[in-house]
Amino acid sequence: MRVLHPDSANAGSSGPDLPVSPQVKAPAGAQVAKRIQTSSPNASVQAPSVGYNPAPDPFQTRAPAEPAVTTYPAPAAGDGLTTSGYNLSRWAEDWSRMRYAKNRRDWLDRLKFLPLNPAQTIYLTLSGEMRLRLNQTSNPNLKKGPLQRQDIMRLVGGADLHVTRYFRAFGELAHGGISGPNIGVPAASMRNKLLLQQYFAEANVPLSRVHLGARYGRQEFTDGANLMTSQRDNNTLRFVLNGTRFWVRGKIIRGDFFDFRYTSLGRGGARDDVIDRGIRFSGGTGGLVIPHDFLGKSKLYLDPFVWRLRNRRAVWGGAAAREDRMYYGMRLWGDVQRLTIDWVGNYQGGHYDGRTIAAWQFFLAQTWRLGAKPTAPRIGFHVDYASGGGAYGKGTLRSALAPFGNNIYYSYQLFLTPTNLVALAPNVTVSPIESLRLTLEHQFAWKASLNDAVYRANGSAFSGTQNTRAYRVAQSTRAQAVWTWTPRLSFTGRYEHLQAGPALTRAGYTSSDFVAGWANYRF
Image 1 (tube, rainbow, N blue to C red):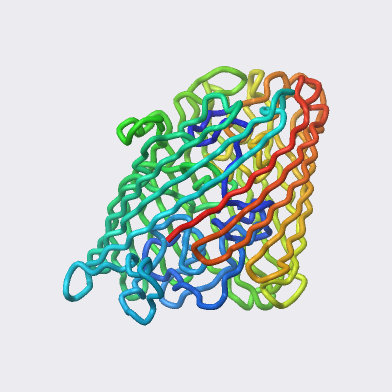
Image 2: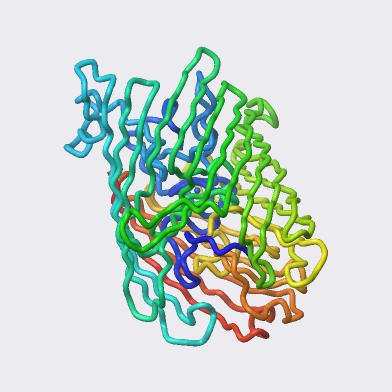
């Protein structure tokens, strides 16, 4: 098993906005080879589109590449995808166009640009979100028992202060509420009276050929494949880190360097959500724009990365010990005409409790658009491998680990994660109307190592599954519908049937059904 991440809700709770096939990830409506689910600090963020309001693409990983002219393409800069002006990370939005009355449609648009000096070089942008959600799960935690129903509410309010083009400060408060029968003790990422979710200061230096920037404080970080780094928007309260991020962005090449510590959430007021100094995540991610005439007409990006995750209490095989894990990887993603891909590979080295770590992960997602229009049907599949082995023995530890990836990519119920896992999932996406997207996926899952366990999204093992002597974990049928009524208001429905295989049933676990629906409003 691994570290129990405080942001991963207990098994049986699912999260919010990501569509059915995660890996080619993108935020609340993002993209690539389509895997479900999911920011650019200042300039280059696209202005709100007019007259085109597509439903979020369940399978996209970042955005279909859209290069900028003077700096690195915003959708590929490591801050997520901006659609119709909105981003999962609200600080990645650029509302400076709202300084002009002709661009404002109502009083909420006025809140996006509140000038604080006559020259309007200092201004405040306000943001907010409310999400009402209901989850229902049969056989919670894959154990026979009464239905679990979760009635969930998220409230978020934020303020973004811009002081000329060079400085800014951002703050965000959040509240998470949950109730319902048979919910047990909810994780702090699901129930929290008040969380100072983000607060940071940022400086930017836009030069003629390169943009420099630095940010310090509590912040979301998604500069990586969605299966490895994600805000985990599925949770009521999103995953945030504490520390420093520094970036250098040119027209075709970029570098992003960071040093973070995790956040330990409480359930009370803002004072009990503190820095977790036992877990440290640091490293660097690069980016290269591949020439657009490569393979014909393409928009592709190559992102190498070297990361280090240090955990003083990592848990494998029931034992907690210090772990230093290194990641050496590469990501190739983007569009080649109608084909969208998101391919990631990484090797993990280091040490756990004096034992050598040697693990691998490969995530390959691809989707083909059947027509020229953006709303044309898409077919695709993803195939993934995450090594396992050694967690319950001695010698080399081969169990792979994602730092804080999309926690619903393999199971809306949070029952699977890329540790000791082989997965294959064909999928299809259709849009009967421009604002509605329907996705259907069927997934096959196996253990990579017979002698290792099946792991939940929060890193904990299903007890006894390391001894079942079976590879077949489960088959899952999943469906999702996303209706984007307006850029501010969307409705999402989800269903998953997980048919447990012998790797689970021989340890006393059973099958489960999951249904969820929610409304999300933001400004």
